[in-house]
Image 1 (cartoon, rainbow, N blue to C red):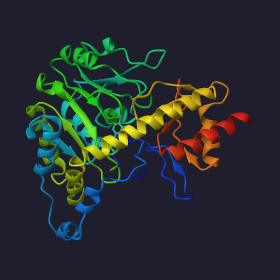
Image 2: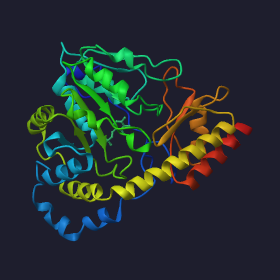
Image 3: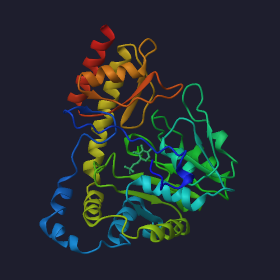
Image 4: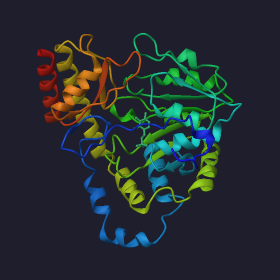
Length: 353
Ligand SMILES: *Cc1c(COP(=O)(O)O)cnc(C)c1O
């Protein structure tokens, strides 16, 4: 820390992303990326002409991509917000909808970025503990009268709330934004985008990083009532109007035209997830019921930390969280069938030792 950093950040702890080591080639199952490449359409779209146009700023409105997403999800283009990864939408939402008087609430075990944004903007927040079985009790989020943030499916558990439960949360917090982070919804969850037509306080956030194989391009989108989207646009035009670069916008348009390809990939990932979960259960591990592209697995007699280290020594990266209640688990992203077979063999080997 330099002597120039503002005092308000001196006790501030930044978010730690999953490791991206360069020392050797790992089977990378630690950051929930897709094991499959972007669609052919995306590859074709990033043409020489597209690169040659990089001397020009991108369209700050992202209109063409908004129209495609609106058509895909049956909403109006004015209901779509585009951002540099869905992280940026989370960032803008905490900035736009909360302050010292208007706090936020989210589960204690969820996406680790939520408390970081709350602290960054000095927003009072509460973390509600998950139930004993790691589920979210939706009733605890009703009538909160502050911003509610829930990942559905939740991370790192992969567990879901139903549409009816989300609707109860939305209707019982009418004066406050309910942000549903659907980063993993394409792997078996049910999107609540349809509810944005009925409720003006629901903000649904999705990303191209997981099911659409574009984590490296940084593209996320939000869907909500047009007025709420206009609030987010105000923040964007007050910080970085060109938040999405030209190549990413083009890739996003092509990806939005490749829905069938990504659905097929999601189907493969779901099949691989179920097969991997069965194999790990047969080895005696506890595996939470996941509707995401990862599984959360643990075993009493081997703590998550040593499982993580033993797997890394065998060239397989998974994610371990040094946090109460979940330190006996590891989060394993779903890769190709071959990668998951390698994972299961390594786990078997480790447990036999
Ligand atoms: C991966 C992830 C994000 C961030 O995605 P980007 O679009 O890559 O910024 C947001 N929320 C959750 C729950 C995630 O797991």
